[in-house]
Image (cartoon, rainbow, N blue to C red):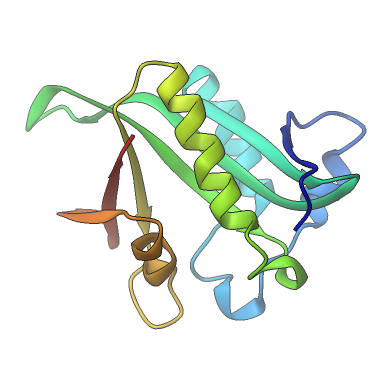
Length: 155
């Protein structure tokens, strides 16, 4: 990993590379492809914050944050949350710190927007990213989102 890491919006010049981004085959059940995320970003409008992760001129990953969504209106109508919705690091780029950079970038953006916590949900299990989120300091909340484990990081 170099010091030339940055996030960029998806543009006409980068869309094909973004759509070609692939995680390890054994991880595909844990995270939706970029194409699904971009469709959701379009459908959810202002609450979605999709970004590409570059190392220099090389695309190494994709992330999408969710911004100030109502979490569980039936339980608590005032419970609004922001966090990491998707994280896709290219299969051959994993283990090099890009995922950690992505979480830090989302944390910094949420802090800039006034949030005090960063939420994430992940597929549990041996091939899931739970250990990754544990290493970054996330703690499980005891909640689930569908079948996914919910974690939170104080920012």
